[in-house]
Length: 79
Image (tube, rainbow, N blue to C red; front, top):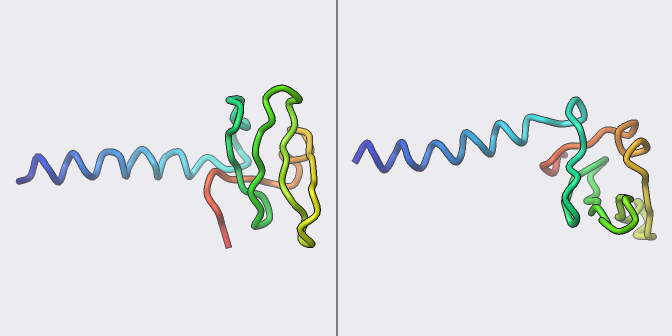
């Protein structure tokens, strides 16, 4: 039984390690990657190299990687 517990805890540890890499790390580069900034999800459009999401009023918003770095981001939704 302890083997099953160890197997289940390892993926959780990897997810936690990835989630901990917020604005301090570099943004993902794979197309369709998703990050969160100020409570909104942004998706990387691979062919344009821009992050697309919506603002507080639901209007489309496109940000460059530099803009997203300045705003702060994480791989998980926060607050």
